[in-house]
Every structure is written in C-alpha cells, then in structure tokens.
Image (cartoon, rainbow, N blue to C red):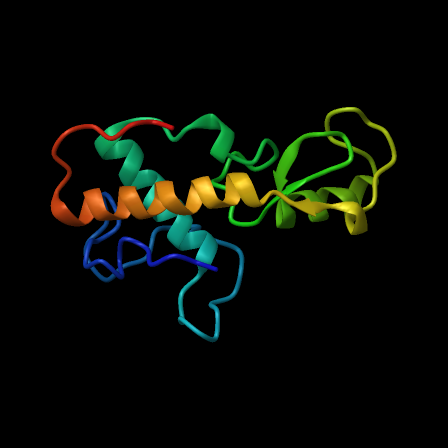
Length: 140
C-alpha cells in the first residue's frame, strides 16, 4: 500500500545529507516488497510537503498520532483513524479515544473514500516535489 516516497523520487530527506535517513523515521520494519518503511516514507513526504507547500489537510491526519493516515478506518464512534494507531490505542485502553465508550478493533471499517483522497493527494504532492513545485497545490 505504501506509495513511493521522496527518496524513491531521488529527493533527499529535508535538512539531511543524501543517503542518510531521518532520525526516528518510523517504527515499522521495512516491507519485504519494497525494502522501505511505509511510515518513514509517509513522514518524509509530510516533512517535505510542509517545507515546500505548508500544512497537510487535517482530515488526512490520524487524530491520535497526527501522522498521515496509511490505512484509514471508521470506528463505531463515527471518527476516522489510522488502523495501526487505533489498534494500538485499543490494545492499551479498550475504549474510544473520543467518546471513552468500550470499543474493539474487530469492528473497524475501511474508509475507502478518505483512503482514495489521500492516495490521490500523495501522488500529486510527490509529483510536485519531483518536478520542483511551482504553484502551490490545492489543500484538499
């Protein structure tokens, strides 16, 4: 599911020499298929987009981690979260982070609409970063 990050586009991480990863970039192991860390690539894209264009649309950010959602899901409380972030929360707390009502991870529903928006937005941002930017992109 991970889109090609800035490094795959030939761009170094911001404020880091080429070839060196960002400190603390990601807590997930590299994927076998791509050899890259999807969360780290998302963080790098976020940093470069913010550096060049400003804020990421807030609805694309997980309310718990404040990171770009990679696998958005709608929970029974009606809010959208990143699946990994909410699953970790539920393992620790067992309740909705918003309503504090009991909640289980097996009732999460993929939010395909926001997932599609995020994929399209990421592709536009990566294309703009690859071509050097130009005019500011629409924010959502």
